[in-house]
Amino acid sequence: MPARSLIIQTSFLGDTVLTTPLIARLAERTQVDIVVTPLSAPLLANNPAIHEVIVYDKRGADRGFGGLVRLAGRLRRNGYAAAYHAQGSVRSATLSLLARIGNRVGFVTSAGHRFYTTQVPYIENEHHAERLLRLAGEGSSTGTPRPKLFPGEREREAVDKLLREAGWNGDPLIAVAPGSVWATKRWPFYAELAEQVAGHVVVIGSGADRELALQVAAAAAGRVIDATGKLSLLASAELIARSAVLVTNDSAPLHLASAMGTPTAAIFGPTVPEFGFGPLASRSSVLGNDSLACRPCDRHGPQRCPLGHWRCMREITPRHVAMAVQALLAPSPPPTSQP
Image 1 (cartoon, rainbow, N blue to C red):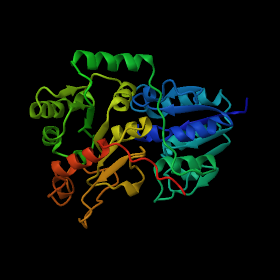
Image 2 (spheres, rainbow, N blue to C red):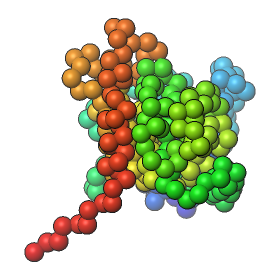
Image 3 (cartoon, rainbow, N blue to C red):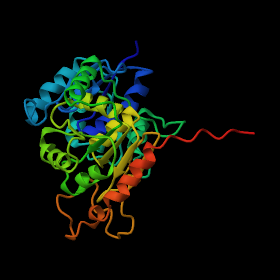
């Protein structure tokens, strides 16, 4: 077996999902371990390309310089030939340096770039999944690589139980993900959308999104399944895979849908897909107000609109989104035959 390699990815959930093509590519030539946060680690369960998932609780048990040194000592004993910095902070770079990993690869634009032995260009107009793949020294010859997740029997059983207890009758599931940790990314009309679409609406999210789910349920009584806080992240991916379409903000569920191949209507407000985080499912629709000179205003999405009007989200109507959903529900046209 070739020498072991380490990927360091301690950023957001979506970034972890988009790292899976890099994991798969490196696993073709080396044994791959990955350092992730406690929140992201369950997403990578059952991934056949990963040898070991190493949890770095940088805000909890491993916080501070002492925690960094302890983890570095553990990594040093594994004798990694290379570290790939999918997350580019100075702390992550220091971790691989303290672990005495000789080849340290990361983006030239990263905060920790001075600690890297190999600096890779960060190409703005590429999807982030493809940018991350460049850390392996190559791009994709077949277009942007699609991420992959691997729900197992536990996740399938959890989704079966949820749908059975909700009395689901087999109608198409319209999944909606109304939450986001960034307030201005939350499109405000999911309840109105639920009134306009046919079939069962299933609300995806954490327990923090329960109030949003209740609003959706009130608008479409008897047709809403509330999954918020009831499923793990990987089980949520399984539920998204069973859905006919997902409507989501620019947030983690978008990337879960990309990994599971679910048609996606992605609503972008303060951010834009050109940052590299658009949907990758084979059928998708991006909705945004392209007429605004103030957009994009932030790479993540501020907690409040800097100009106070929030038109980037308020002017995307429920009817507009419902039409996008209907188009995604329509059967795909057959491929055009070649003469």
